[in-house]
Length: 258
Image (cartoon, rainbow, N blue to C red):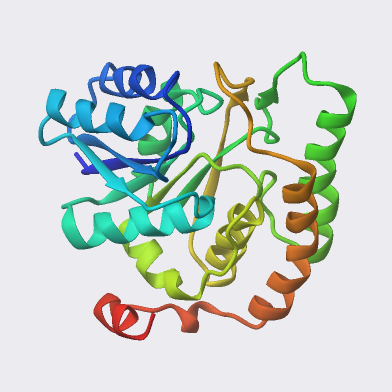
């Protein structure tokens, strides 16, 4: 059974974190552990994570960061911590708010066993869906971002390049060269999808239903949406000529140059 680590970035998720960790461990998946990357949440989420470490020794880990540094930096910090300190094969990225439902974790792991390098949970492949109560504007914006804007410029075959519920092989993250990833907001998800595709990694998508968060406030504002839209042009300029020959293999060297 592959050793799988769920990496969860948090900022003010005290209402969700303990329930999310309980739901993940209730799946009873062998060799499943959790790493919380907390950005010094003022609501005490970091302390909740520390308490969970005591409750689940060996299966629960926490990385405290000094402040709110952004989604992309949180994931990269978590991935680096895991690669350097934990014995893992797969790394899952997901939110704490239950918009990414734990019930899909076994499906992600199973799909990876078919030989993929990354598997993405998708709202827009056949069988996928979003919350029925979403307004027309929100549905249109999400569909336009994925099927028109991102696809139109980057030509990626993935139908949900902006989603943040994915599973990666450790070797894939190393091969992508995390030191060169620059996005830190919503476009971070697009960047790592585009980079993995340009590097020739084998990618699959599985359908999921995407509900609204259980509790707390969404961090998605208009400024983040604009940053993501404009960031697509930077990705196209920077990665358009990448090929599998640009994969990196020496993680220690990456650390020396990052």
